[in-house]
Picture (cartoon, rainbow over the protein chains, first blue to last red):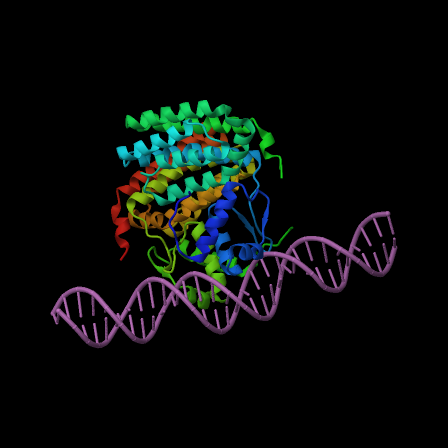
Length: 221
Length: 221
DNA sequence: TTGGCATGCTTTGGATCCAAAAACAACCTA
DNA sequence: TAGGTTGTTTTTGGATCCAAAGCATGCCAA
């Protein structure tokens, strides 16, 4: 589901497995990751596990403390808010870099993802499709560093996005769909300025909703 | 908790040494980093070197290709331009997050750095002090992820900033000093809005100058 | 009972050795 | 002579073993 470079290396394979587990919520924030456990569970020795943990640390998915091991970072409301403010600034840039290179086939693909979202989905599937939707709008962005930053931001906030969705249910679906449709409409018109603005509003509104629900951050594990 | 400055881990030590070398320009973009050479030069076996390279990869200072090793990334003009556009968006955010927490002692420190810059310095020293100046304006920003992103952007563009300075000499010094003074003045007034604006202009003008000098990028091969 | 310290157990960090993949070079063939 | 191919060398990736740093438990003393 996530980008598949299929780096056939063993450490990349372990990193991918851990990444999926963390993004799926199977490993909660604050949880410690013992190298030996992972090595035994996923096969291989501890060395590729260490490399995998470094890879994930670079993506913001784990946090490594010297001599103390790795754990999934547990963020406070202020940190998540800042991450969303970063998204508000970076993602419109990624969108503008992307839009010039999007074909109408790309736009059709985006529209199709949105169509599937509107067919009504559960929380898990919504998280996957919503991410697919936005990433699809960035496929025209050829800059690796920018896209890596965007992915980092999505990764770091994924758990709290899920917690929020699980809490509020799909009541917000109508608003999100309206925002997505406005964004797509501006993209169809090839109006970069409008598209950036709609995207900014979309992220900003989500941020404001998130900070209104501090109960998301109480460790419910 | 007092000292413990010794992130005495061997891999951190090696990473620090390599980081210094790369930022100082002793290792040029495109140059390959052989693990065994580094291990021999800095002491230790190849394993902590591998960890160090992963750390640096997370900071954008090296690029790791599976089974092909690590090299200092060599960027084209378009990539550097995008990195500057990212700076234009992220650093004003970091500044606004920082300003509320800056004491007048902090502001005095910033002013002192600027004073040293204006005393006339060579290119190498300017690069160090200019970086110190901007980082000092961000010291109030407590968000680790945001600061990490900012540092990444500075690291990735450091070589091209040096190439630009070496090429154009210090003719630009007056403009930079004026921009720094405007920024400091807004910060002294505690005017976040103005400070963000001046910073944005500062970065944007630098970007436009950079793209006018494509010869900076030809030094590869 | 409680505070502090010492000892063990667990977990991570590092070194050496071995296997696999890629770069390089020389060779053979058309 | 040029191009592809194969064999060698170099370099990275992975496994096992050993050392050091944390953490917990339990003991001793006040």
